[in-house]
Length: 293
Image (cartoon, rainbow, N blue to C red; front, side, top):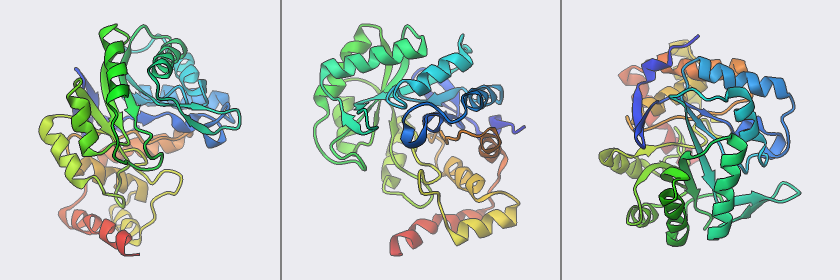
C-alpha cells in the first residue's frame, strides 16, 4: 500500500487535506448516468481510498444523478473527522442522461439540499459552482448571480466554503469580490496547460487548484515522452503524469478517479514517484509537442 503522506498537504478552506485525493465521478454508470455496473466494487473503492489515507473526495449530486453521493454515504458514513467532501452544482440530468444547466438561485438551492440529503450531511464543506457559459471549457460571462446565491446559502450555514470550476481569471476575480473562494477546479494536465499562469497566481494567494481530467479524462494521456520517462523510472505513465502535477505547484490537489481498487492503488502510489530534474524537463516539453500536433 502506498504512503500518500509523501505527496504533502495543502489547505482547502480551513481544513488541511492530503494532496492526493479521489474523484468519485466514475463510480456512476456509463456516461456518469445510472447505477454502477458493480455496486460492491464501488463501495470497495471508496473504503480503500479512505483506508489508504485519502481525506479529500470530489463528487456531485448530478453524478448518476444522486447515485455517487448515495454510494459515498453507504460506504463511508459516519464519516471520518478529517474527511473533506467537495461537491459541485450548476447542472441537472435529463432522463436520457443529458446535462442540463441549472443556474437559477432556486435550482442552486435545490442542488445544495439534494447534496445534503444524499450525502447525509447537515452542512457541505465545499461547494464548487461550475460555470456553464461553455460546457467544455472556460468562457467569459458573469457568474455574479450564481455565486451570490451560494454566498446566501453560506450565510444560512448550509455551505462552509465556496469554490469555482470551469472558470476564467476574470470570473475568479468576480467571485472573490462576493465571497472567499477557496479552490478552483479547471481542466489541466501534463498535455493541457492553458492555466499555467492561473495555477501560479492562485498559489500566490493560497488558493487550491484542483485539476480535473488530471490523466486526460475520457481520452487518457498518450505521449511517447511520458512512456519513455515512466519506463526509465519503473513506474506507469499515469503515475508519472500525477507525479508531474504534484511537482508542478504546491497548491495543486489531485482527484484522479477510478472504479477499480487496483487502479486506485496505482494512482495513490504516484505519491512515492520521484522525478529527476532531467525527467521534469522532458515532461515540461510535452505540452508544446501536443500543441504542435
